[in-house]
Image (cartoon, rainbow, N blue to C red; front, side):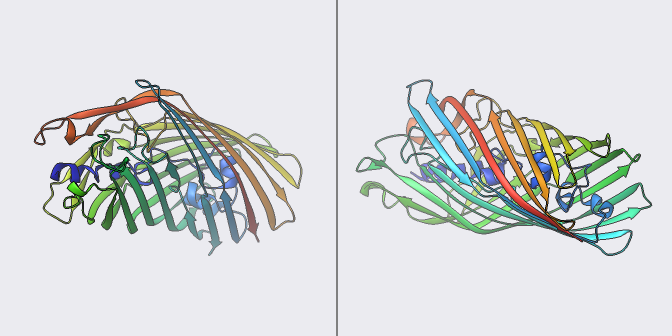
Length: 422
C-alpha cells in the first residue's frame, strides 16, 4: 500500500506545462502568421519575445502589441490491444502583451508578458488509460523585462530576466486494477499546486548584414519550476484502504529546458519579406522527475528520457497596400518523446504547422492583426511502458506495465490582436 500511495503521485512529472510535450508556439499574431519566425524580424513589439536585441531597431518611440488566441485541440485514441476508443477535445486561451520604449537612439527597454504553457487535457473519467491521466488543467504566465543596446546601425544586443508564475491541477486513477475501486469507480487522486514560481533569463543578438539581410540569435536558459506544498486528495477510496489513502502534500522540481534559436530574414523588395528560423531545444535534461512527500514515503521517479529536438520555421510577408499586409508560414516541429515513453497526458508526435494572417492598418498608429494556425501531428502507434503497478508483482521491485495504442491529434487556433505605436 505504501508503494501504491507513492505511485499515485508519480505522474505529476508528465504535466505538459512543465514537460513541454504538448506545447504549441503562439507568442504573437504577426510572427505566428509568418510560421512563428521572428528571431531576425523587426515587425512590432513582438520582437521583445522573439529577440529582445531587435527592440533597438524599431522605428517608433513607443510600440505596443496585444493579442490572444483560441486554441482548440483534438486527440483520438484507439487501443491496439483491446480495440477501445477514447477522445479529448479541449480549449486553451493563450495571450501575449508586448511593449517597448526607446529611451535614446541607442537604448530601448521593453516588457513581455505571455503564456507559452497553458492548456488542458480531459479524458473521460475511468477510461482505459485512467491510471496514467484522467485530466489536466494548467496555466503559466511568463513576465520578461528586457533592455536592448544598439551599436551603430548594424549590431544590437538585448536581454533580461524571465519570471514565471504557474499552477496545475491533475487527476488520475491509482491503478488499472478494478479491485481498488469504490462502487465501480477507480480510486483516484487529484494533485493541485498553486503559486509555482521560477526564474531564468533570455539574451539575444541581431546583425544587419545589409539593407536586405538580417541575422538573429536568441538563447533562453533552462528554468526549474518548483512546486512546493501541493495538495493530494483522494476520492472513491474503498473502506479497506481508507487508512492508507489519506490526503497529503507533495513537492517537486520540474525542468523547462534551455533553447537556442537562430535565423535570417531577407527583404527582397519594399513589398516582400522572407524569414527562416532554426530552433534547438535541450529536452535531454528531462530524464525523470523526483517527487517528494511530506511523510516517510520513499521518493518516486517518473521516467521520461526525452531527447533534444529541432524545429524548422519558414515565413513570408507581402505588403499588398498601405493598409493591408498579408502573411503566411510553415514549420516542422520534432517531438521530444521517445518510443515507449508516450503517455496520454502529452499526446503529441512530430508535427507540421500551417499558418497565415494579415494586418489591416487603420491609421499610422493603430493596426488590427489576425492569425491562424493549423497544427497536424503525425498519427502514431506508441505506448508508455514504465507504469510501475504494485498490484502486478512484489512491492520491492518494479513490475512495469504497458499502455498503448494509436493516437491522432490536431490543433486549430485563430487569433486576433492590435498593434499600436507612435
